[in-house]
Length: 218
Picture 1 (cartoon, rainbow, N blue to C red):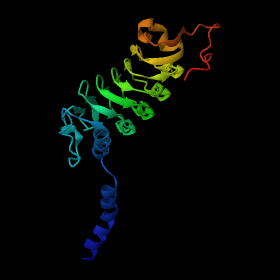
Picture 2: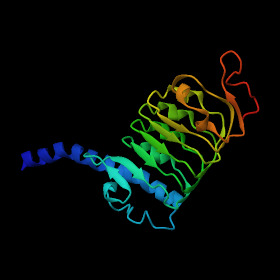
Picture 3: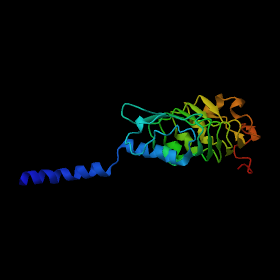
Picture 4: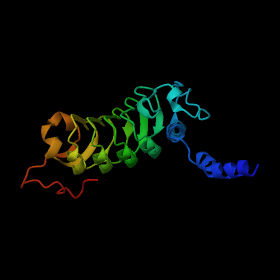
């Protein structure tokens, strides 16, 4: 009897640790459900997002890998309105964030810069405002960055030129200002990536137009 009691006492810390430490699935489910709470969903595309289910991999429009970690969020053209949430930055294995052609408003959360596995960030054709977060420069695997057709303001962060994997960039049809960075990965992008930003002053020319020359850019 004494040995049995001792065994249970040894086991107790491990049981407590299990109870107190939520699984990755729970954390990612909470992050996704934070998005659901922040948006209106007239088409009921998020109807399957049930917070009582511990595994969000069973939810529609969510794809997971073999470890039940979220890798894709496909909600393009879903008639969603509302705002993005910083909790999305907790989906650390997310590779594709597809939220294009909705009616999303508010800023692009700087926490999206925590999505180190992200390959594609598609937020085009929404009503997003504020600046492009410089934290996106931490997305070393990013190949596709499409933010066109929003109401983004401010400068194009020069830090984004460090994205060596970037193949497609589109920030056209916004209200960006200042000059266009031309170094690093930006050296391969044409003017089509920046069209219809009436306050952009053209490409940064070495020795002529300084990146931070336009003090009125906000």
